[in-house]
Amino acid sequence: MASYRFVTLAIVAIVFPAVAMATEHIVGDETGWTTGFDYAAWAKDKVFRVGDTLVFRYAPPNHNVIKVNASEFKDCVASKLSEPLISGNDTIPLATPGKKWYICGKVGAKRHCADLGQKLAINVISDAPAPSPSTPEDNAASGIISTGFPVIVAALVFMAMIMV
Image (tube, rainbow, N blue to C red; front, side, top):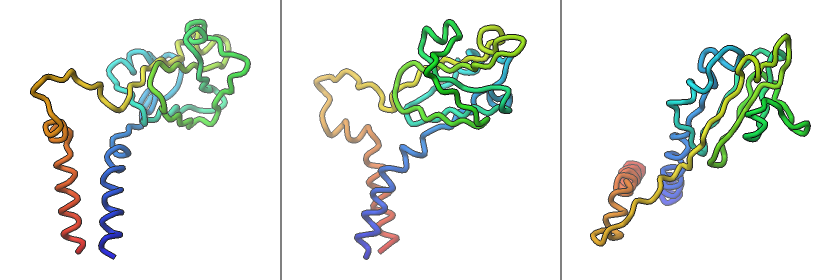
């Protein structure tokens, strides 16, 4: 019985940090997804990682969200094959690293993207940091110690002790 608890705890201890570190980014914060907002300035100081999510909040049918490529973003024109998101609370998981572009495809008296600046470009980075160059002094033991592995092991041992 205790071994099942330990295995479950070990799995939770390994998976939980990755889930807990994911961030939900409300695009535009309390302003939401709208016209007349500087999304480049909003995104400038934020770090977007694989595993995070973008949430576009707006009042439908006034706006929508369309994922586009770089040239479509520049021209503020989405492909006819692009399906707009229209719920008003659109959640987009950031599953892969790289540049991502989003626009509003609505047209009123003015075009929301081209004329009113309703577009967002971000760069999503991988969750894993790039490996640092190794030196002759590096060894496997120092790598394990610097990863936080001892903290995880200590937490698992502590939890196992209080469950037994």
